[in-house]
Length: 190
Image (cartoon, rainbow, N blue to C red; front, side, top):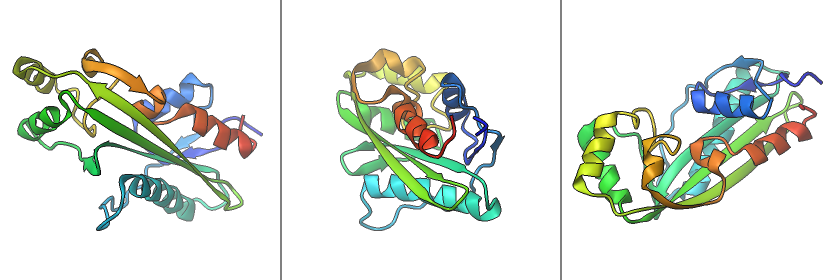
């Protein structure tokens, strides 16, 4: 089977870069435009798995007979899911929340193969952030690299604020490669 025999249901440049890194670029990119609202009492892990499945299903409905790969990633502090900040003030609040604390990054990946079979994997990583000074928070917010991200970009300036990571670096970036490659290989995509 052609190694490019799948569609990526995401417009994330980080996800595309990660797939290219392991030699498995998609044949096409087809973002899923779905409602990403969290349900009442939904845990972060249930939410991220549901989002990955719904994104894959949304694209699969438009592209029957294709292999569809979708992913969703969230940063959590306790049971709180960090949303993408809409402005500098919101991002400052996020940085204060992360300062000196541990956060989890949950990344779910779903593959719906061309026969309609669904496979789902969850990556659960932990990131420990140092205590951030007011200047460090100001500088990070001013950098703007957080735009479009939930919480932070681990592959950018924020890496200098991380004391420890436990889990999948690629999952923290936005696509857990070990789980993704196993799903694709299981569907005969190599």
